[in-house]
Image 1 (cartoon, rainbow, N blue to C red):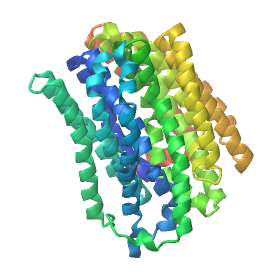
Image 2 (cartoon, rainbow, N blue to C red):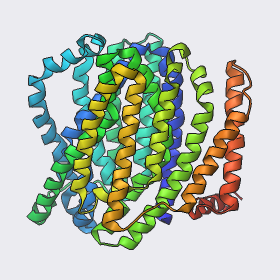
Image 3 (cartoon, rainbow, N blue to C red):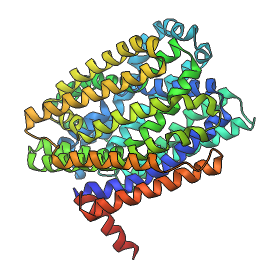
Image 4 (cartoon, one colour):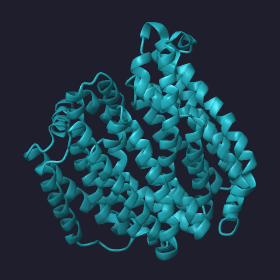
Length: 497
């Protein structure tokens, strides 16, 4: 777990900077310089390209995660795995492009009634999907080589910084909206080139045809796995992004903008999970491959505890400050409507995090087909629930749809891991952590607000957050609730001195 913690800390720096930039961009710069309609259009293109990328990459990033141990051979360029995996998105893009041409008009009709401004720009999702797919391959290859900090920094920090610059340039009138959207396509290509240069400097950019000499059985198993993962990852992306498209069809682009901003705030509690999972995945995969279940169980339990704690304090801070955060936003009369969307989604996300790396354990074990079936069921459920609940509850209906699917999928995976591996991350300690977090929320609501001016709102957020974090940190270290987090603190304290 020490390697995971060290890599997670390094990766978290990139995430942390990215979060700051993302928060400034999404909550202030984008909402100031872009209209609600323009913000919705830009997000729909980005998120649809991520959905399309699921088809395009043909499962190659997940193949790298699962099969790298079988290809690994430093003296042989890892048997040409990188080149083989790069061929997947190129083939996938051509295969994906053909049917899309035939359904192009029907796809546009979905947005004609409520969100016609999206239609002229839908084609941009195509090059974006190809670039995302290629970037995912390079990120997975870096992750397999235990290098997660730089890919994280490039995607979370550099990409967002470039996006901020383009929004400001557009807002100041130097470029038009179409050029602004084209810039965002080009930025993904810049990140790809930067990551290639990074891998070259590390000596990890190994392009060769040695995969032609590897056992055909391994290639066959990898392709079969990738085919199943396409369905699963498609379901994941549908769960993450399809609600925006349905909202655009049923309500309009302004509602999409409200949901995007609210979801962004809610998803901040997942930031520690992303850093932890990015390094845990290859280690879990390797230990599952070698049937080292003792190590898997250790990672599984410790990660669940750490995610509950770190995600929990994030949930508390979001919950007690949400009204102040929304009141600070430009066009707050629009975006303040998303308060309960934030609370509903963030609570569901935290519960899922607290149940541990169930998804990862299943995905990289021999039971990965179960995950595919579950994700298909989840994707169908989220679509049906959105279509059913949005006409009844509006935007809250979409929030409940996301929350319900997130919760039930997490619970199903928890029981599956317990039944197949005999592992369960939950103990009496987690019960007391929940009570402690509820106590922190109560303290946050008891602390009075400073006022409604911008300075008063910011001061209130800082004051509440400092008190809550201080109490949380004191209890965490006093009772050594997490050995890993205590180790991180002591190590940081030692280096600081």
